[in-house]
Image (cartoon, rainbow, N blue to C red; front, side, top):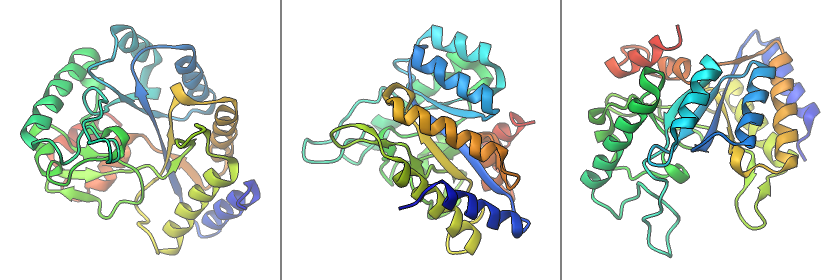
Length: 272
C-alpha cells in the first residue's frame, strides 16, 4: 500500500541526488465554465500549478474561452480531439481517433478542430493533440505535423520522445479517476503508487528520466475524494524543494530538443 510518506521518501531521494523532479498537470474534457471548473482554477491559483487544459473544440463555448482568457497564463488550452465522439465498434475500446476510420477523415476533423481552437483562443492555444480516451491509431500520428501539431499527449510512459518526425510526445501517468463502475476517485494508494513508481523509474534510470511526471484530472467527473486528494497532492508537490512544476510548453520544448520543429519552437515561445 503506497502512502504519503512513500511519496515524501521518493522526493527526498531526488533531493539527496541533487536532481529535480519535474511534474506537469493535464485536465481533460473542458467545454464550458462550471462550478467544477471554477474549483479547478482555484486549486491552480492557490498552488501556483499551471494546467494544460484539454478542450473539446466542437463543443467548447465562447464563455469557456472568455473564462480562460481571464485566468491568464495559469491555463493553457490544448486540443482534445474534435467532438469526443466514440467511433469504435461496440466490442472495442472507445476511440474517436481509432483505426476503424480513414486517416484522411480523422485528419479533416482535426483540422476543423484546430481552426476552432484558433478562433476561440488565438495564439494562447498550443498545437498539442490530446486524443479522446488517450487512444490514437498509429497511422494517424505521422500526419499530425502536417495539420500543425507539434506534440501528442496520451497516457502511460512514452516509448520515445519523438512519436513521428516533427512530433514529440509528453504523456500523463497518474489518472485520478477509476472509470469502471462505480466511477469515482481511484483511491489514494492507487494514485500515489502510480506517481511514486514513475518518479522512481525516472530517478533510477529504468524509465525515461526526461519525461516529466504527468498528473491527469477530469474536473467534470471528480467526486469529493478526488478533489481532496488533488488539493493535498498539489500542496505536497509544490512545497517540496526537489519538485518543479513545468508548463506543457516547457515539456514540449524539452522533448523536442535538440533541433525542435518550427511548431515546437512556437510552443516554446509561449513559455517565455
